[in-house]
Every structure is written in C-alpha cells, then in structure tokens.
Image (cartoon, rainbow over all chains, first blue to last red; front, side, top):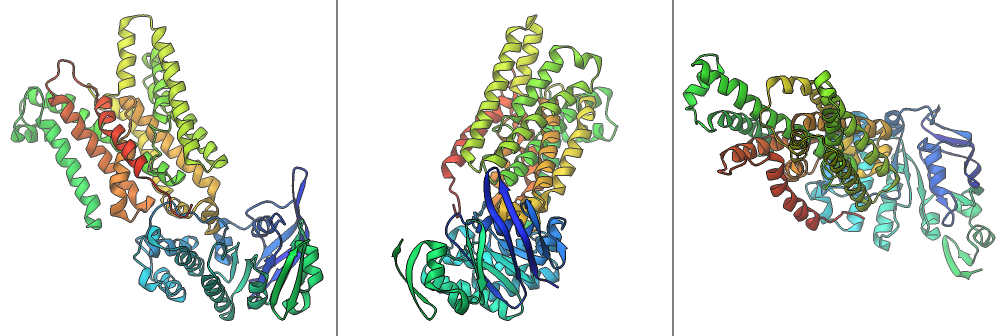
Length: 253
Length: 328
C-alpha cells in the first residue's frame, strides 16, 4: 500500500514538454535508479510525482492517494524527499537537522517526544553519525553532510525515499557509502528512487533502472535487461562497452 | 544556561522598566515608585509614574519586542541574518503611510487611523519582499530591494516634508522619521496593542515552519511544510507587529537585527527557539537605550531611533562582514 505509482504523467511549461507521458511504479523492497542526461526532466518528474509541482496530464498516487490532493504533512509521512540543492541556512547541530525530518510528525526542536527521539537516534546510528550529533553542520565535510541529509530523511520513517542526485560531488568512497545506506534502507523494507549520473554505480546498487531522455521514459527494467551499448547511445549520445555491471565510456558521439 | 535565557531576559526587562520609572529629570526613590505603582504615594508621584514614565518605558518595551520578534521571524523565513524590518524597508514604508495619515488629518478624525495606516504600509512592504524572495534566492538582491524600498519611502517622505504647510507639521514628521517613545500614553499603547498581539501570535504559530526552513525551501516542503501558507503567515505577522511598532514610535531600525544575532548561538541557531528571547532582548535594549536618551545631558533630547541606529548600524556592518554561508 505504500507504493508510488505514476500514470501517464506529463509536465508542459510554456512551449517546453519537460515530462512526456511517463508511467512507472516504485514499491517497497526495491531500489530504482533514475538515469538520464542533464535536462532530461528527472527532477521535474520526481517533483510532479510527489505533488510538489502540478502535472499537465496524468496522475501519481502515493499509497493509493493522488499526490495532488495529499496534504504536505501526509505526503511527507509517506515519502521523504531529498532535493538536489540542500543549503543549510544556519550552523545548527547535526541532531537538530536530523530532527527536522520529524516535522511531519509534529516534532518541535528542543522538545522532542519519545518516538521522535528514538527515530532521530536510530537515523543517526544508521548513518554512523552518533558521535557527530552535537557538532555544528558548518564544521562537517561534504561526505559527512550528505550522511546528515540521509539521516534526516530516514528519521521521517517514511516507507519511500526519493533522492535527487544524492552522491553528486562526493568522492568514490562516500558515493559507495551513501548508496549502501540506501541499499540497507531498501533491505529493511523501504523503497527508494535515486537519481544518479554514474551508470556503473546505478547498475551495481539498483534493482531497476529508469532511462529518461527528453522527458520520455525509454526503458524500465533490471540492469541486466536494460543496460546495453545501444541504450547508452540512445539516452546519453555516448559510445560505450559493457562488461557485467561496468561501463567503459569510449567517448561522446 | 540556554534554559535560563528566557526567564533571565524576562527578569531583566522587569528590572529595566522599573529602573525607567525611577530615573528622570527628578529621580524618584524606589519606595516612592513602588508606592505609586500600587496606587499609594501622593498624586504628583502617581502622575509622574503612571502618565509619563511607565507608559514610555512600556512603549519602548513593546516596540522593541515587536521589532525583535519580526526580525527573528523574517530572518528565519528568508534564511538570512541580515533580514530585519528596518533593513528591508518595512519600517520606512510603514512610517511613510503613518506620516501620510497624520499629514492629511486622518488621525485627528479617528485614532485607529494611525496604526491602520502604519500596518498597511508594513504589510505592503513585507509582501513585496516575500514575493521577491520567492523569485530570487539571492540574499544580495533581497537586501538591495529593501534598500530601494527604503529610499523610495524616504524620497516620498521628503516630498511630504517639502510640501509641509507649516513648521509644526514639519517637526511632527521629523519626530516620526527619527523614532521616539517620548510622551506616549497608555491610550497610544492601547490603540496599537491589539495589532501587535495578533501579529506576535501569528509569528509564534509559524515557529515550527521557521525551523524547517533551515533546510531550504525545497527540502522544507519535502519534510511536510506548506510553503505558501508559511510565507503568508510570516508576512502577515511581521507586517502587523512592525506596523504596530511604527505606529507607536516611528521608524526605529536595527534592533530587529542585533537582538536575534546575539540570541542565536544560545538557542542552537534554531529560528523557532530564537523568537521569544529575541523579542525580550530587543525590548530590553530599547528600554535601556531610552533610559540613556533621557539621562544624556544634551540640550535637545536625543531621539531613540537615532541612538538605536548609532548602535545598530555598525553592528549590521559587522554581522554582514562575518557572514558566510553553509553548503552553498
């Protein structure tokens, strides 16, 4: 009952068709990677699916209810969303930023209830941040900060996680570490949609790949089925060879 | 320590207001002030305390609290430590509309005209700033819009002064521009208080949302904040509170920026928890500054707004120079 189902979704802004008749589903227990070049409409698709932006056509349901009519609180309880830009306005302690993930459950900073405190503590330890709890966020490295944002998302205890380019600007070690966090979340019964640019990484961690180009969904399937040189040429305009889950990019077309 | 912040500030405010009742051209002994406050003492003492010093001190407290609260809330909404009713041109616009109401004699017809005029000006300016904040994420652009708004209000104010029919209305307007709490009565307070209280109540209701906005607009709506409602509520609350403050005392700048800045490290930089202490601290600052104004041996009594700007503007520059952003 906690799946995200997108049905014939289109987003048109002015003359631009940003998302064009996309349908897919994400259920709990699966990690879906959303792939596509810059400007393919990945962010718009996710925002429209979550109801943060009004689609021109089509519907998206979250746990059976249309996301356009869900209240902000109810939506946040069903899916946590990590947007691409995540600037923190103040040098708040890590614990407080993570506690903001409990907003939809009515938590107020400094006066957390028992359930909120437990959720925050669980999220901190899942992301290996317990020893950082009282550090100010402006003293953290990019990799640590990325984990803070994931802890914030996990603290919501929503069944679905939607993360827009969570590993951009991270070094390889932290990319793997962050995706392992998502993988663990999925193994524990959650569902996740993650926007990625590293195709090898996506093939390694994801159960399914969604291939988006010019707003249209070109393929939806397991890495084994959908990761082919032809598809890479079609979606990214690149020449590449594939060896298992490893992609060797020869050059741009 | 953090837990003692609010009670400590509250106590300091009470002490400061009491001290403001003691001090003046004729210093009264604490026992005489106390007696006058509870209705004893002689008629002269009672008049001095109840009609002159107490309303003046309470006006300074309310004006400061309204500005400190609005400043803290606007800083939370715009995620910017430099946001404040004065800097954003809200106070200037409110004092322009208030002067307008005075100039055309609306206030003589109905005393509610003054707060309503000031509040309309404040609401228009706050809404404009919030609208601009939706379109641009640039802090610099916002501050520049505030500067532009202040300049425009200032120019229109100069125009009104230019056209002033006689020196009396001219000096009235200058008083308004400079900002002062001298000669305020309980009646003045009563006419502004409802707006101030409603504004403050609205701002307190937005507090959880202000915390969530620490994450940025996009992520805040992701954790379940209704952004549109939040913006509207803060604009309305800050407009009402600032407008009421301007109706009471004219334009007094920079307290709204200094108080939250001092409070923030004590409340883990959480905008929600900074609201109440910022209000109390800003109120305290103005009561103390007003005591200073009254005690200073100058020929003309200095205007409270002038002193506030003399302290506040350098603080503004210092905060701006310290500023760095996280994760940008």
